[in-house]
Image (tube, rainbow over all chains, first blue to last red):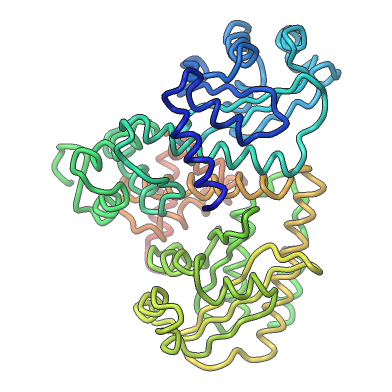
Length: 227
Length: 247
């Protein structure tokens, strides 16, 4: 069993537990004190999904309240934001309110990773440690893998688990089809991706099969006649 | 003549410390240069993730079938051997692959590609990926081509490692993750353009690149703008017409 499938298995197992898949994520992130997951589709549209512990929950809430912090930056910048020491000058200047409050509640180091499939943005995974210190190369790689698994589980969660096994990385056609649906319906990439997967689910086909039909122009998502 | 172009290419790929560096664009240019300088017809480039799984990042043409051919090879094929052993692998006639890599040979045959050469992207002991060269004509790769191909792969490897180490202080996993995500955004952007202007995927890709170049923007930024609908579609339309018109 690969690392990814082991993580996927834990996440699926912990899905219905009190802290949701955050417990499963934490299991695979040794050295981290807690994990929080927030769904985001825009900087102002956020919803906490789960947290492994009260500190993680407060960290998410805090960023929402003060409008600044690593999660928001990771989401906006599409890159991980690794704050190894929130007491350090650079981070205090970057997030004056958040950094002080986070240290007070017991999070000295915070690491935020965007959950995304190309331009489709799903949310952010955030971990913390009470002690300062950078994330090692190994820990970074681990975190990225856990993010990958979280994306898979969150995506099939929207379809009530019906999509089955780990589907990422999708083949190129799936992403191309998503783009084509963006243009056909004039919707966001997030919505196009959901529509594509919903169509596959409704038709009891794989996402890749439907995507191939879209790319080959056998299936359209709008009712307009082809011009 | 070729020496000049080779020298130019070597300088080009050593220079990764530029503000607007973009891994995918860099690898795409490398693939294009290989086709130009070597006696080969198509090139695909793959980098390995932290688990040793090869991931396709760029190709000389974004034609869907070529990408498929590269994709099936990431699990089994000459490039996996090449990555594992850090040595060049040469398949002079793809028909001979039938038994060993059954998924690969029909796709290669369909594309009219009959010889495959995999060159390691390697710095000392570290192999970071594979350059896959395809040629329509079966037979060996000329020794000079092999050396030039390897030189390009070596320089590109050093460029990627130095960019990772110096400019962004990113670890391998992060650089690759970000490149893979860019790869996905590019596919999505190709889809938008393909639908909007009724293009095939390769033309859509060329339009994206041309647009990025003419504006001196990063390919990944242009791709995001296309998907988010914030790109100037009138300008894009003109570029599409240029790219699409027969030379």
